[in-house]
Structure formats: structure tokens, C-alpha cells
Length: 195
Image 1 (spheres, rainbow, N blue to C red):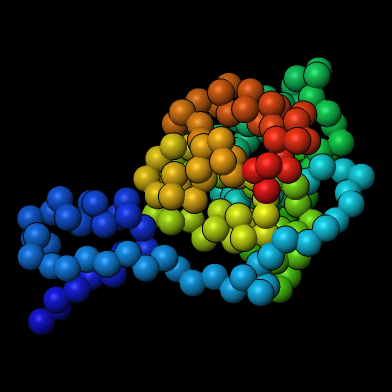
Image 2 (image 1 turned 60 degrees about the vertical axis):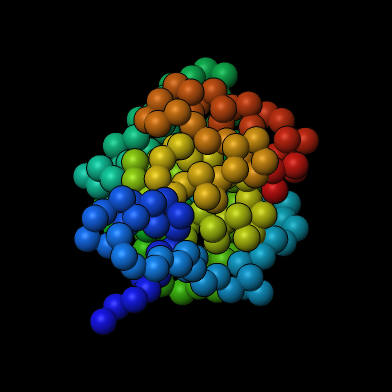
């Protein structure tokens, strides 16, 4: 008989507790493990500002694939936008790459040391997920000292603490996202505080 369930997030625990089928179970929260000897901050000097984004495909609604494209296109159409920014995309297949001049497509990375180097060469990590449990992508980025941004949904607020290590954005509001993003990247002192 199962007596205890393990959840990686408090958000998921709350969903389980609200299900009458599991009302008699003990539920503990144990986040996914993270190698902080590998995923750690390093000093780097970039001539180009690198923004790390997890992106599976345009069609992945839950991961916000359509919102990633809307956001990048919105910034690229803004005459005040600094074109010295690269959007570094991790998690997608080559067939789903984003073909824009300021987008670097890394594809799916199955090598943790290589992935850690990508985080460590980045300046900020942003998520467009509409639903996440406890996003490993963001916990790894936080462990590398990156300021974070994501929508205020599900388990994301357990990683992105608003005005502490990044910004939580009203769900799916790309204009609010753009405004907070521009505020952050134009404020080195705030970026340093968040990291």
C-alpha cells in the first residue's frame, strides 16, 4: 500500500491534496536534484547580451512556443530595441529552429556540462511556459546566478521570486513581459541584485 507521495513542487502537492482519492495520503515535497558544483555562477564578459529561452516547438502550447515567437518578433520590431542581444534557444529540434538573425539555436542538449556552459555564458533566463511543475530549466539558471522571468503560474513562483531574483509576469501578457524585460536589461544594478 502506498502511504506517502512525493511531489517536486508545492503547487503539485496542493493539487494532489484537493483530490479526494488522495486525501488519506501523506505528501512530501522533494524538488528535483541539482548539481550545484556544475550549475554555478561564473564571471563572463560578453560583447553581446545573451538571453536564454527554453523552446520545444511552435506547436507546444504548454511551453509557450507561440509566445516565444511573439515576444522575439515584438522586440525585433521595436526601434528602441538593442540589436546586440542574442536569444539563445535550448530544447528544440533542428526542424523546429527559429530562423531569425539574432537567434542562436542550440537544439536539445543532453550533456549537463555543455548545458551548464550555455547558462554560464548567458545574462538572463526567461520562460514562456503556460504550465510548469517545478521547471528544472529555471532552477538550473537560478543556480548559475541568472536573473529570471516567467509567468505567475503553477510552480514557476517557487523558482522565480518576484523582485528578488527576477520578475513574475501576469499570465500570457506579452506587452507586460516586454516592459519588464526592457526594464531589467537596461538596469545593470537590478540585474546584479537579481543574480
